[in-house]
Image 1 (cartoon, protein in one colour):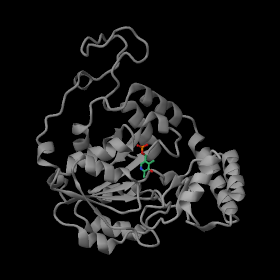
Image 2 (cartoon, helix red, strand yellow; image 1 turned 180 degrees about the vertical axis):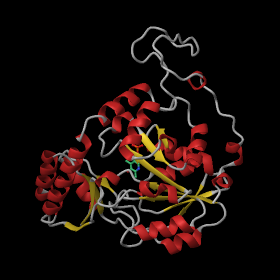
Image 3 (cartoon, protein in one colour; image 1 turned 45 degrees about the horizontal axis):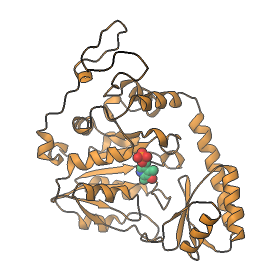
Image 4 (cartoon, helix red, strand yellow; image 1 turned 60 degrees about the vertical axis):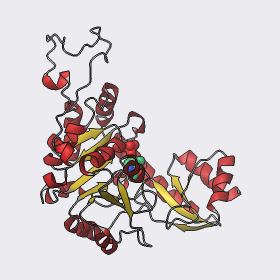
Length: 344
Ligand SMILES: *Cc1c(COP(=O)(O)O)cnc(C)c1O
């Protein structure tokens, strides 16, 4: 499979902007930098950030066991997803496949980039309908978005169906693993080398507790990473984000302990939700949220708001009639949620 054939012709021909810091890399203390029209007075952020985020990528590379050449960083996963559209989807010509109910940004970004969306709803058990997906694709189908664990349903996709899609779909398959650190299942990272059309996205926004710094991570073949690199804004990851991410990732066991605490809370919350009379279904979760079915989602959503608790009403999504999505909070927050649910 030749990835070059999937890249938009205008992107292949693109001559990327070359920034001052691209031309000369190096941080020798004695060096005098008169190349980028920066303010010379040091305050920690007066210099442009490293456009290739070398130090941060090396930390991530150690944690994930993936070479820096297979990593691209974005201003949140949302920027990474947008770059994927721009690299592979010709506006008003190509199409992408999404599997509702799923993360809303795939559709927003398709509309933003004037790319046709083909929807194949998940099956009743929230697994991909591989047969229907393979029957709807054509030569202009460039990207298939798989979100596993899926938002808002919380389940992971079966390894077999993902494998069928990876092998039979001749476009790019994006597996969005925003919630992978909460999952019992394995990440697809270990199998990156087997599939030249595979892109895996992860984020520091969820398990790693850094939604505020906006750092999304993309793993793919060096060929794909190199294309995305030529089209990304030169300084897309700011200095404060790079510094904070390195600092937090260096705190040994921080994320691991918080993930364990969240998973423990998830099990407690499920046990308590089972005792709420108007909760009729609790969908199994591989993430840090739970999708529940209630008698009247909009009524319950509004009642919770009145009591100062904000949840996500997913009732209009396919297969999610009368469903609310609840994020796992702290022990105190979850207790307040249960107490309120039992009182309304
Ligand atoms: C939260 C979430 C993300 C994270 O997006 P960022 O821009 O990295 O914060 C990505 N994908 C899914 C499915 C999500 O739910």
